[in-house]
Length: 160
Image 1 (cartoon, rainbow, N blue to C red):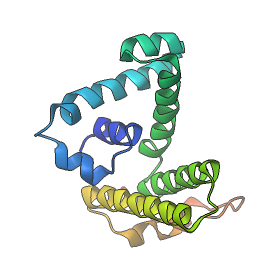
Image 2: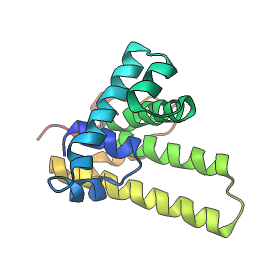
Image 3: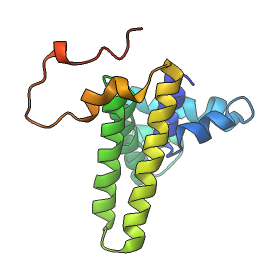
């Protein structure tokens, strides 16, 4: 999968594995969603008005707003500095959404667990694609807020 496919998967709420399974057999996944993802990324970079995005996507302004928010969040995941940060951003987003929707029932908690498991699956796919192992990201996954980590203590996950 290329970056644009990851971005489309994030924007349109597909797991990476599910999205990848549809590549090469479904025009929607091969061309249409990547086209819209690219347009949304451009709209964010160039700060298009919502009405322009709505016209380009042929949707209401409210739907266009939601797509722009989804694209912004997708970029935080796809363009993270490494797969561990991508995973952390994705889990954070899942938790925020669960809190907004209310997480006061057993079903809501189970739905959050499912979403986190999907995010773990996406993380695994990213690692597989790079030929990396989870242990290479141990320090990144254990990173705590407001604690300075120095580069010499981090594994270099992108170097073989």
